[in-house]
Every structure is written in structure tokens, then in C-alpha cells.
Image (cartoon, rainbow, N blue to C red; front, side):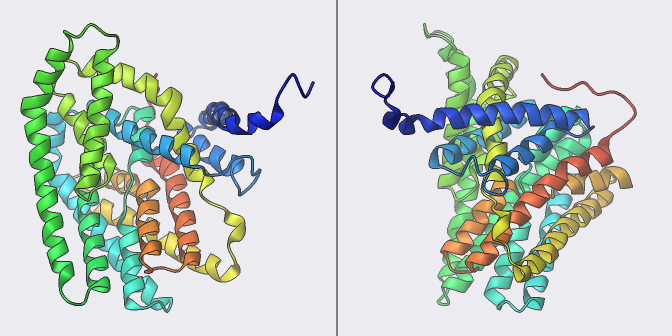
Length: 401
């Protein structure tokens, strides 16, 4: 039997079993989550915790899973861009700006003051504030889609605020790193370069969206090959994400604007249907599970537990209240305003990226980085039920396919 099956060679194919396990558990967990009245994304996130080092230990973060997860979140935000109604997006610009500014200011001040109170130095405290500024709306996007609320005024406001939040967060991150690592003024130069790159990126987006993409997609239909619209859509999403990374921003900003630009073309409905099928059957489940895999809660000691609980409370309340104040100033009622604030709570992969930068720069110790992972996880887990609570109504809402 051993000669018939070479078991030593099977270890090279363990990723096949891991992927099958992820997809199976994600669908079961998502189904059970919806059975108890919660969005399926909550069960999918818990599936990662159960399968990962915290409980069963069947799966661990691997380079392959991480890279597929990154593609998953890029495609998730690409779909959100394709779904965005540009008329509503323009109408929500004022509200999104207020939500973004207050959703950055309160978490930064709250994190900085909490860090000082916990006994950290000024640099570490400033970085804790920067960490709490991070927002990842990928979880909110999925939850709002399931509730049929992504195209509501509140949903579009959350998306717009998230884009601005990301830009403001990058600027603050650059300031903190620049002024703590370089006392000779190099940080100012780096900040000027960053501003220039951001402006250049949005010029690139406008030119590509208005001039190049419509022409390129029209010409691509003449090519005698299969699924050309889907392929060109994926090229655009990944290409914009790569350009955004080159310009110092998160890749999800680039993919969102890629979808936003393509939503103005005649191909957006066909592209949306095909990208949705590909993403939700393959890449997106891996993204949700990977969030749970990176956390090993068993490593947390009593001292770190206290810090983690305090920072988690600050992380949730400052985003919730900051977003709610911004929403109220923009004219939303109290329930909608708090729903907008709830949509900004999750830190997701953006929080993990910021945390890893802080660790590599020596701005936070390793145990605080472990706490960061758990803070990211908890803020991500509380977002779906909070959105459900604030945006639910008595009408039955159809789930997306």
C-alpha cells in the first residue's frame, strides 16, 4: 500500500486540504450565523478562530492563505466600487468628510491618551493612537450587502468616509513614523512626498476612469478569447490596487476606485455578476478565515489582558461616537448616525498592516502587537451585530446571491 500511495509526497499538497476545509467550514458557519439572525460574515470570522491556533489548531497562517486573503479583500472592495451609485456618492461627500474627520480625531486622541495613562512613552502612545485610527470597511461592506443597505445613504456615507479615513490614517502614520524616527526634519520631506503621491494617484484614477478604461474595454470585446470582460476587470482591480500601494496607500483604496470607475461603463452589470461569483466562491471566504487564524488568544497574560480590554473599549467607543457625531452634524437621525459609526469600527486587515509596521519600526513591543491582533479581531466581530441592530427593520430584506 505504501508503494501504491507515496505518502511522503502528499505533504506538498496539504494546501489543497486546507482550502477545502476553509470553504466547507465557512459555508456551514455562515449558514448557522444566519439561522440565529446574524449576518453570515460573523460565522465566517468565527470559523477562522475555531479552525486556527486559538481552539482546534487545524489551520495556521501560511503565505499562500495570506496572499489569497489579500486578493479576497481587494476583490471585495472592487465589488463595492462596482455597486456604488456615483450620484449618491457625490451627495454623501459632505457627510463622509465629517464622519471621516471625527472618526480619525477621536480614536487618535483616545489611543494616545490611553497609551500615556498605561505608562507608554510618547512615541508608542502616538502609534497606539494611529493604530486606532485604522478602518477597514470590508466587513461592513459584506454585512450591508447582506442586509440590502449598501446603496442606502448611510451605506454610501460609510464607503466614502472609509476612503477618506484611509488617506488621513496614512498621513498620520507617516507623521508619527517620520517625526519619531527622524529628528532632522526628514519626516516633513517624507510627508510632502506622500501628499504628492496621493494627488498623483487620484489624477491617475480620473484619467484612467474617464479616458482609458472605457476605450480599453470597448476594444477588448473584439478579442477572440473567453471571459475577456471578467479578465480585464480583474486586471484593472489588481492593477489599481498595486498602483495605490506604490503611492503609499492601501491596495483596497485602489481596487475600490477601480470598481467605481468601471461602474460608469456599460459593462458594469456583467462584470459585477462574474466577479461576485468568482470572489465569493473562492477568495473572499479565505479572507474572512485568515482574520481568525492570525490570533492566538491563549498567549495573552493577565497584564496584557487588562491593556487589551481597555484599548478595545476605547477603539470601539471612539469610532462609534466619532462617526455618530459626524453623522448627526451631516443631518442623519440618531439611529442612522450610530449605524454609520458602527460601520467604521472594524479595523480588519488595515489594523494588522499598521500594527506590523509599528512592530518592524520598534514603536510597539511584541506583546502589544499580540494585543493589536485581538483588538482587530474583536472590533471586526462586533461590527456585524451592531450594524444589524442599528439598520435592521421590520421588512424582510433579500440576501444577495
